[in-house]
Image (cartoon, rainbow, N blue to C red; front, side, top):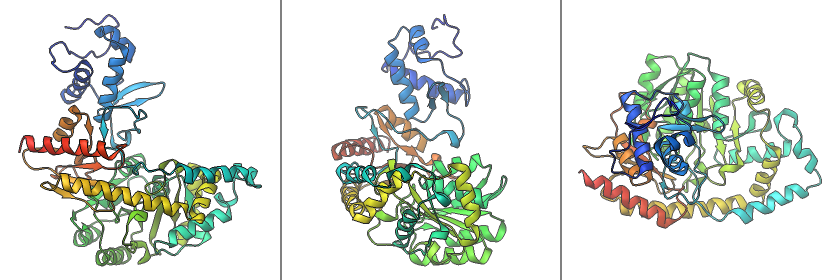
Amino acid sequence: MTNNPYKLDWVPEISNSAAERYVAIAESIGEGIKSGRLKAGQRLPPQRLLAYTLGLNPGTVHKAYRLAMKRGWIVGEVGRGSFVRGSAAGSIAWPNENPYDRSIDFCDNYPCPIRMGPLLRKHLVAAGDAPYFGNLLQYQQNSAWSVHKSVACAWIMRFGVEAHDQNVLITCGALHAGFISLLTLCRAGDTILTEEFTSQAIRGAAARLKLRIRGVRMDRNGMIPEHLEELLRKEKFAAAYLVPTLHNPTATVLNVSRRRRVAELFSSYNVPFIEDDIFAPLLVEAASPISSFASDLGFYVAGLSKAIAPGLRLAFLRVPDRYYQDALANLRITTWLASPLLMEMASNSISSGDADKIIEAQKMEIAKRQSMANRMLADCNLSSHRNALHLWLKLPEPWRASQFKDELAKREVLVLSSDAFAIERSNQTHAIRISLGTPPSENKVMEGLKIIHDTLCKNT
């Protein structure tokens, strides 16, 4: 038994493990959670004290906590420590800040690393040199400068949704736009619809707002309208939250006939919907948004994070006219306004055509990585799209999603399992999402895909 001179609440037993010490500590955390010894929200021992207790270098414990965080077991809070992961609202991992980490990270659904710095840097410099620079550091009337609003409207309209200055908001990213929409449409206790799989961020937002979620079944073509109609007929819903284009996590694209039918159903039952179209710029063959068929009900979200740069933290929200003032009030109480300085930089990059150059480069890199994945996983049950930043890999028996994710993590390949996205606990789909954009090179993508393929074949 390990000595415990500092009276720590929990100390891992690693003496009998053949694994490297940091791996053994991480796996002990996982076992503690499964057994109930470690509870959701419980604070783990400070790294330095645990290192002294185990007779290890503090760097080894730090590495162990990082591994446990990547496996989704714990979360870290600066200044407070590390905690056992709780609900979906607390399960969204921060980006890995260490570019030299040995792990191959397929967890984070970010754009591919392309050379965009020079194209964006000149617009940042131009913003600083502008004669109205001082105005960009101030609050703006009605949340945004009118010139910036015009750029946001033009960006939305390029995807086929009508927009004007008095129904568009500039927000701090697509999630913020979605959160504002939910605040506008819902009250605590309401029920909303999503696809049967949806992002951790949406699940987290719903949990914070105390909303219930029902999932609409999907097939390889996306949401199934017949099941949507069945749910609408039986229950009352405050809103729906949809990702019809390059759906996260399944990479499906809802075809135009289904989009029309979905719009008809929402109109028939008078259910407003939030259409998160953040991936639309990546689609080579444009798909008419659902909002273009039901503009009086559609909250349409168009953004820059997946196609240009996540750090811009900008998205554009088109709101049905009758909801605009409420949505504007909710923008004010959540952040007041998106950064005019960042919006100036984004506006210049859009107006000059440099944004489109970045998007085209992004599409080319995605196509390379998708081609590689489809070649290396050709014998697997793969759902993908040539324009998607991610893949959806369904697992054969006897694999279970969480088991497969943990097995990959032992080989330092990080993915998210289907249970992170599933709305209903009864969902029996076992799959993983593989995000192709995060690895820093195509060689890393290839190495990680090979490990996934080898691991998949090991027990089948």
